[in-house]
Length: 189
Image (cartoon, rainbow, N blue to C red; front, top):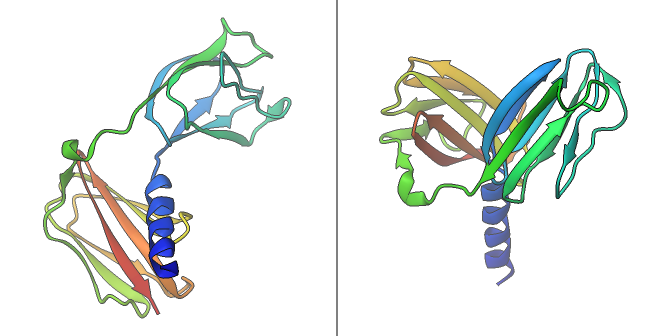
């Protein structure tokens, strides 16, 4: 029973951690609307002396005025969020975030022929990206949801993953290519 609970907890933890991160180059001007899914993170990368504040509920506020650095928020509540820099004013430096529900599984196309070998990995593993085309985003996620590595590839069907510096254990390899995605488990010795 304990093993079953651990497996369920691990599955939920990993599935909840696959939110995307959206970057905003936080400079003077209007930044438009950023559409995200629930569980996604927005990261503001400060260019100059700024802060970021939301109005509405729930609220978020970066710490004081920053010159450089970044600030991020993970959105776990649906809704529309207006954000601005209080130093420059809402009319001079602002934007919006719209948080929508995650699309249902029926809307996701799986990548055919996606595989990784050898598995378990002893240092290097080949990832066959199957029927992906164009841009491919690959994430390596640890058992507790921590993103270990992110790689972006273009026009390739095979990637070499170096796991020599990884701690022994279970990892999940998530691949996104256009509307197609797939996740596979990798064991590292």
